[in-house]
Image (cartoon, rainbow, N blue to C red; front, side):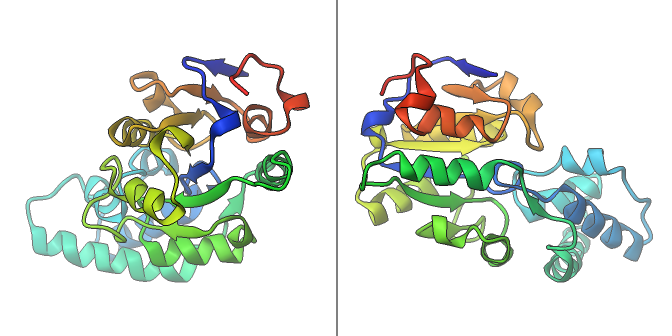
Amino acid sequence: MIQKNRSIPVHTTKLLIFDLDGTLVDSRKDLANSINAMLTHFGKKELPDEVIASFIGDGAPMLVRRSLGDPDDENFVQDAILYFMAYYREHKLDYTYVYEGIKESLDAIQKSRNGTPFKMAVLSNKPVGPSRAIVDALGLGPYFFQVYGGNSFHTKKPDPAGVQALLEESGVHTEETVIIGDSDIDVLTARNAGIYSIGVTYGLAPHTLQDAPPDILIDKPHELAAVLGPREQGRLGFDR
């Protein structure tokens, strides 16, 4: 189902910025396994996957810190982050997959533009190394002119620094830009940057979208094509 809180002027939109985890790919299992490997290594009790999933979204350091219960020993936290990242680098593609319907939607979105396709990029809070590796390994690389991660800038989402960099690189204005993500972090990023937002409820943190409603909310990956794709698919009352 598609819910509209504010119209997005799709006919003048030029740049689409996608979150990665919970938006393009389901990485829940590999992140949970890597966190539990870290917890086991340091003699801690493993956590259920759904609990770990609720900690995802603010970058690897915060994911590790939350999983450890926010300890005061900063040296221990840093050691745990290093262990987690080393393990995750080796296991980031064990179970991670592209959500069904994402590639079809991206294709439909691009074909709808009559020779002037959207510019598309990825802006994740996951570190840039594994972000780019996942995008390339899962065949998403050709869709995006840039992939940025949580350590690409001095701050992470919801700070607008990443969006601002992508606007400069693409030569696009704020009113011509939409961010697509599965959590309130992406919606707040949009608000801070002065761009539009689409929230997805099939991801890792749909509950957070209740307190920070996006301009448009969708439940399934294929609905991206209905919102941003060909006019004949649309007829949904969105500004086109």
